[in-house]
Amino acid sequence: MNFEECKTPAQLIDAHLKERGWTQRILALILGVNEQGISRIMAGIKPVDAEMALVLHAVLGIDPQRLLQLQKEYELAKAQIEHRVDPSLSTRARLFGELPVSDIVKRGWLRGINDVKDSDLERALCSFFGANSVDEIEILPHAAKKTDTSIDATPAQLAWLYRVRQLAEDMAIPKYSANRLATAVQNLRALLVSADAARKASRILMDCGVRFVIVESLPAAKIDGVCLWLDEHTPVIGLSLRFDRIDNFWFVLRHEIEHVLQQHGRSAAMLDTELEGERAGTGSDISEEERIANAAAANFCVPQADLDRFIARKAPFYAERDILGFARTLGVHPGIVAGQLQNRTKRYDLFRNHLVKIRSIVRPAAVVDGWGDVAPVGA
Image: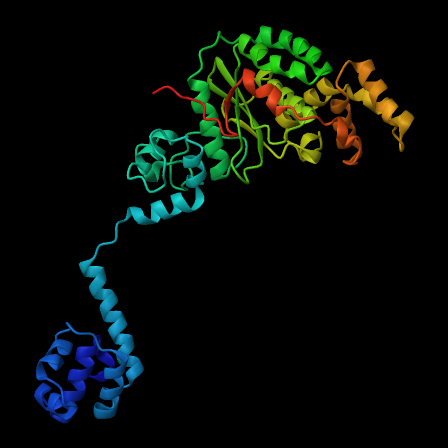
């Protein structure tokens, strides 16, 4: 056999032996080793190590690097035959590499699972995502998409969305009425006068048949809210309360209410992320649905024509008494005016003291998951 045609260490050694007319016994005698050891190498049982490669180079003139390379290739080929790699490993690697499994487990979203090492983890993940098997879970690129969203959602955002849906499905509230919700907007507007009044928002929405849930965002998800429909008659509003501020709460909530009133999200959940700055505006780079919701939310908080006039009169200097007086005129909390003024002027240093925290006020009256609490879900 030509040296270049050799595919294994044994073939290369045998070719050199034949060239010299040597047997394996002669080689063993020259090396001063037991013939059985040489036989094991020639049978592919014992691998050629670096030391043996150097010895064979000295005795037979075999290139040690080529000999060791053939040994690696032989071992890999042998392993491929003897050991079949579980085809699900690549799927599991992608699943556990992209999905924040540890956070999901820590948050108690998987029934009966308290540790990522739990042997039942994959089954619980499949149940959570409504999949028959791990490789059908929606975050995987080849999986059939079950939950269309208005954006290309990240795995963390998608997991948050599934948790919102899970909690909403377990709620028992009156049938949805678009007329009641449209009327309720005025009732909600009256709550803007104080931070404490925000606790009533959840009940008003649910009385209209809107399933309202609050789910703390997963790390790095940067999600603010969602409007989705369980079916064509059952709207859901989910908030993350990512920013614990009165202005943000009312803007995001009214934004999602407008999605419901406009029947947005029926075919694809309106998933709102980083709803601030330009993304909270009505620029041409914002989708029509989002422009409509942003405009409704902004006017709900502070009528934009009134804000325009206020800025025209007071810019560039705004006094504390101006903000307080403007808020009293509108019948809203000063923090809501401060938030709208910051967004309009991009001066986020203005009147930050009025941006009071709202989360602890809103949570007790709502279905909430997060901040140490795990919302129960029926079996």
